[in-house]
Image (cartoon, rainbow over all chains, first blue to last red; front, side):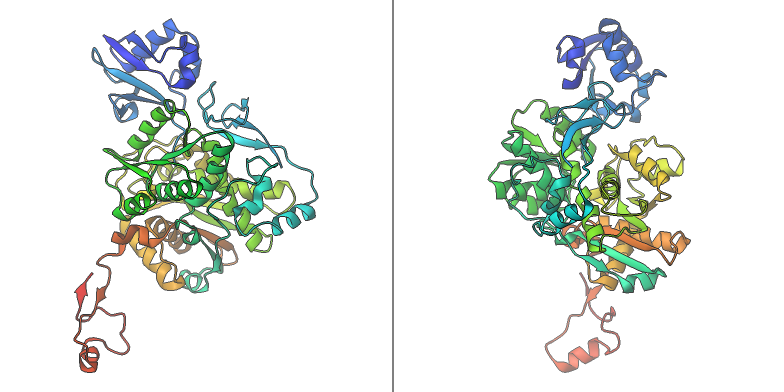
Amino acid sequence: MAVTVKLPTQLRDAAGGAVAAEAEGATVGEVLEALYAEHGELRTRISDDDGGLRRFVNIYLRGEDIRFLDGLGTAVSDGDELTILPAVAGG
Amino acid sequence: MPADALKCKECSATYPLDARYVCERCFGPLEVAYTISDSDPTELKRRIQAGPQTLWRYADFLPCDPSQPPLAPLPTGMTPLVRADRLAERLGLGELWIKNETANPTHSFKDRVVSVALARARELGFDTLACPSTGNLANAVAAHAAAAGLPAYVFIPGDLEEEKILATGAYGARVVGVRGNYDAVNRLCTELSAERDGWAFVNVNVRPYYAEGSKTLAYETAEQLGWELPDRVVAPIASGSLFTKVARGFSEFLDVGLLEGALPAMNGAQAEGCSPVAQAWAAGTDVCRPVKPDTIAKSLAIGNPADGPYAVELARATGGGIDAVTDDEVRAGIRLLAETTGIFTETAGGVTTAVLAKLAERGDIDPGERVVAYITGDGLKTIDAVRGTFEVADIEPTVEAFEAAVEPDDRASSEPGVAV
């Protein structure tokens, strides 16, 4: 299943300057793994030592924070869009 | 105490003082770092006291170019610190002070953070001011941009209080209602900030500078207390930025020798309908699980608080805590503050007062303590919160009608009248 992952400006240099990337997977976690396989540097920027998300990384599936869904286990469908954004704005 | 870098609060990576807010290495938040000056505290104090009656008297501790006076078109700060003996007596407390932030130009503490963000945004070459807001920030951005002659765009949740929407549009700002809650608005602005050159989203791409404005709440409090510290602070938590920066302000004054002693116990206040930080506190973790807000305290309705983990750590480190109160307690808090101090606060101040009352009732506050509560916004901004809480007598214009309707010893009673 091909999913589009929109990257924030802060991560684009680690993905060769791309604004978005296509990746395959059945869950958010699998899509991220596919993304890391393509762009190795993204792993340490997004993921913590235990394989979870770093605490200031937000990921949205079709606009919904995946923490309100099933986290990294959230199922994705062909053509879905994931958006990665920093969590430190606002207030 | 010159600002010398932006520093990541997570991994300590440093960056130049430009328009960035996220650590590229770990996504952590960036904060302004300063070189602690070895100036004589007496000389520092003299410089402050000779400064303007605004927050810019603390320019030595703010992240703007020291070689030129900051652009400050709408004077902000030096709000009253009010001794609240009647409220203290009601709650069984000793020395209680209210920092009355309703006295700022747009009637909330947000004028402080916008003052600093605007000054720094101009230095960095931005030509437009913008923000995602729960309302108070929208008011402040619209007003300060108008005073500075800059265009402003404010993004708000579509269901915001009408008072806050009207009081934003009145300044000529472009008001954009977004279908969604604050966290959705925030996400949109985070995306937009990367696409719009020349736009300073005050609490996104220039957030490290913006956040510094809240330190002035602590500086003023200390100065108004005669260069002394409170023992305990009660302040609201939305993103956690104000809460953590108040402590930072006290701590910087300690570092340079302007104050002696230890940081006050920091007590945070949230509404139960949006209490991710209080829940994390209660669970003994600093992981703030995002929530979908449902509370009348809309100015505190941030379900995904950026500084939540730091707020929890701070409360723990200072022997404070974080409590949540119900919407009914918030309404009661607004009433309690108004009838004992003459200060009419919005729902956020109701949250703070209600948590103060809860701490007092629980016996968490020693009667010997000096307590400062931060009342961050004006009651006229959330007028619905008091609608229906009292009645207005409706009479013919005769003495008899008045005497029949209102008993002399019962002037505030609800005898015949109409609900408002």
